[in-house]
Image 1 (cartoon, rainbow, N blue to C red):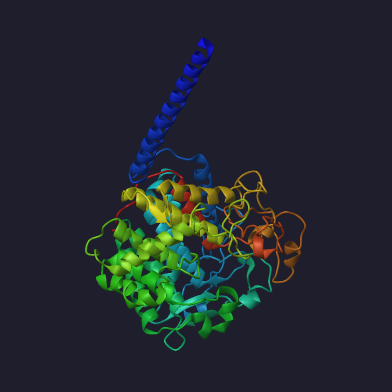
Image 2 (cartoon, helix red, strand yellow; image 1 turned 120 degrees about the vertical axis):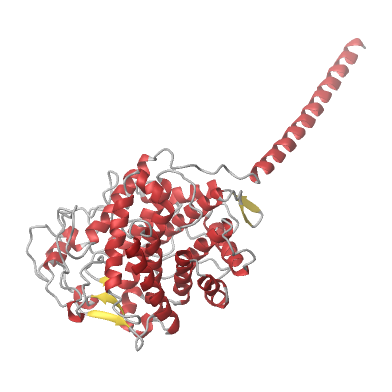
Length: 526
């Protein structure tokens, strides 16, 4: 009898302890949930001036910046690339213009105005947003110099209000040769858009390049800045007044840089002109009827040389996030911001609307040709939006029934950068010159031919077909990148994967600049 009573008492106490533990656990869980929820709604601290430098990204940025020097045409000043020399010195002569500057597009010797202008716009944007972070690792001045090398060309390519030279060289003839740019002897014909043969997207993109660059040079070179802004306004008027696709009016350009529409460039240019001038008419242009027609509100798109909508959505989100004067109540701006958040939701891996277009290693993958353009561009936009959120004390974005912090966007941006720099199944860097393993057979004429070799148009093809690695390293070139199954064929003849482009360089420079260190975003470019 006594033993049974003692056992029953023990069981009672045990049951009480279990119940008490469950109650305490439930209270702790509820409090934790409440704290977590409160923290979700609590903005992260605003970063101060540039902080500690991340050596990995700083080293990669210094390397990436060098590809602009490799791509320069014209009379080279303070040439830092031992195997490059003066080239294209007579470009523009047939029109009595000096079009010797600018940059070669990729591994060839063409100057395509459309992607070159996009390169300038993105590089300007990177400098405007992350100039302090570039300066922290001594890369701001090189970035400004590379930008000016392009904008000097663009100014000369716009000799009259409604005339813009958009191409130097014949791509068919150019691609029949394999030679160093210093040895070119072939004709370099010019292609233009004008009132008779208009080309809205290339004129508008050039306007965006000049408007954004005018902000970069506003303090350091005010006269040059004013010149750029004058050209930007003229080109925007030309683009808007004579709406027509350049790749329809000049079909031969469609083989290389075919445009899928010009509405996005008009909005992009208007947005940059608003930032450069403060003129409300440009903002009204982007947020009114033209926005409804061309902005793809609510339909996320990929940022690239062909489609600027996602970039415009992020750029205009600055205005609502930072409470710019005179823009409250603009429903169009609200549409841009919600669309930008839609783009972000598509990128975040744990978002309900996350894109499934990724490799197993986590790289966003959209296209076989130049596969790295889209993930790097997307990561750049994510880094920007993350910094806008931090600086504006915006705690989170909502994707379906999930919410995400600025740190989630930065984590995504880092994941794409890290993949490019070697954290991938191949354990190789796609940024030439970075790391222990990177492409050796880059599709690039100047890199593939010894600097002391004398070749003509066709006898240089032996260097294309050579089984030896490139004698010159195209330092900083971001090659096209992997296939969806994460394979990469390191072959000079594999232009789909092995060719670097100048606009890829602008995008990776922007991304790396955002990751070099942390700082608050500037609330206004002026």
